Structure formats: structure tokens, C-alpha cells
Image 1 (cartoon, each protein chain N blue to C red):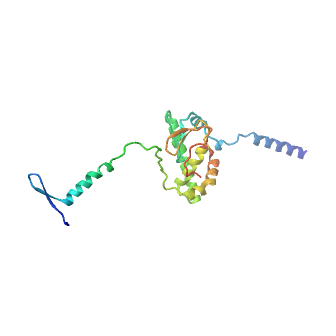
Image 2 (cartoon, rainbow over the protein chains, first blue to last red):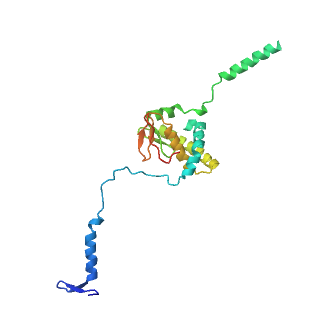
Length: 76
Length: 128
């Protein structure tokens, strides 16, 4: 048989289609899978604050910054 | 006679120049060194200094002053190297943390203060 069936509930006789019933069933079965995990992860959370740092520039600056620190030793 | 006089003058001049104190511009302020050794000033992973517990107002002012000077130096270098100030400062932080001596404080990549030991310091994997 095709098409939605009409089911009546309770004294009020409200009609609930099988489509809505199916959705409710699916929602009920999905509830456990939607649980939020509140335990802490094993590894420490690494906070990468410097997201705008280009790695190739970092490599290029290697020697220059060494010299910079040597030349300005009093503030480093 | 003239040779002897000029030799005496020359030797005297040399002695005077050599006895002059070497300019201290390339050395750390003793208060800064002491605060580093005591662990109340530490190297942050971003290339600047931070204060830990026990830093008085003078120390905090000193740290602010040193950080302003570091930023100026990083900025000038960034212009010369076609990099951002943040990139130069980040490499500065890597270098400075590598140069810490045992007992000094530094910030690890997670932002936590560590005490430097004889072992290599914990550095960001992005450090050169």
C-alpha cells in the first residue's frame, strides 16, 4: 500500500500521519547518538596564537634574527 | 730627540685609549639579569618578556621598556626583511627561548611557564 496512513490518537481524535510518526521515531532513536562528551581529552590543547606566520618567512629570518639579537644584546 | 718625544706621546696616547672603559651598550642591565635569574622575568613564546609572580612596579616598568625597545628592533628588521613584525618577533621568541640558561623562565608552546633545565627547551614546532 502506498501513501500516508491516517492514524487517530486519544479522545481528541487528532490525526497524526505516518510520516510524522516516523519522524518522531527517528528522533527518539537519534537521541543517544547526540550526547555531549564532557570528559577532557588526553592530549593538552595546543593554542596556536600565531596563525598569520608564514613558515617560509620564518626560515628566511633564521640567521638575520640571530644577528639582530647579538647586535642588540642589552634588550635581549 | 724628536723620535723619542713622538714615541713617548704615541705610547701615552695608546695607554690612555686602552685604559678607557669599553662602552656597556651591548650588555644587559644588572637589574634585568638579576630578575631573569630569579625567575620573575621570563621569555614569552611571542618574542617579548613577561613578568611572573613577585615582580614589583620597577620590574614591570623595566619589562615594558624592554618590550617597547624589542618591538622597535623587530619592526625595523621586518621592514628590511619584507616580513611582518609578528613573524620577526616569533623567530625572536624561538631564539631567545633557545638561549635561556638553566633556572630562567620561558613560556612553552601551550602558554605555560617552564623553568629551563640543562635539557633543550620546549619550542614551537614552527621555530626555525
